[in-house]
Amino acid sequence: PNKTLTLRTGVAFDQTPTMNAHRSIRLPDGDRVVVGVGGHVQMTDNVGIDLTYTYMFIDDGKLANLTEVGKSDNKTHLLGVQLTWDLV
Image 1 (tube, helix red, strand yellow):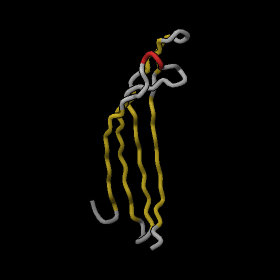
Image 2 (cartoon, one colour):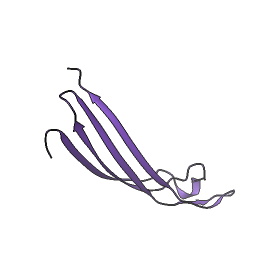
Image 3 (cartoon, one colour):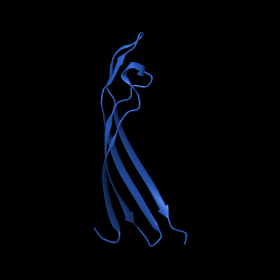
Image 4 (cartoon, helix red, strand yellow):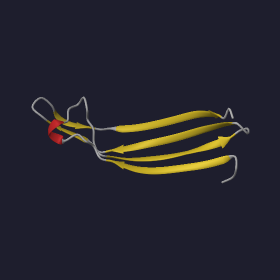
């Protein structure tokens, strides 16, 4: 919105490379939609801080091999903080 504050948003779709026949509880991956929001605050001429929150909506991983039957319930929250220091 101004020189000291920058806002960011994003949405992504990520298709799992794991097929149902080869999925196990050790890798209960599924397709996901990723939504993120964040921003950058320029505190001085050469120091700024970034803060980001991301949530992944992950499809349930269905398990159906010889030793495991069931499904997994996957959720992911990510929080990122970064300090930017321009030396030039």
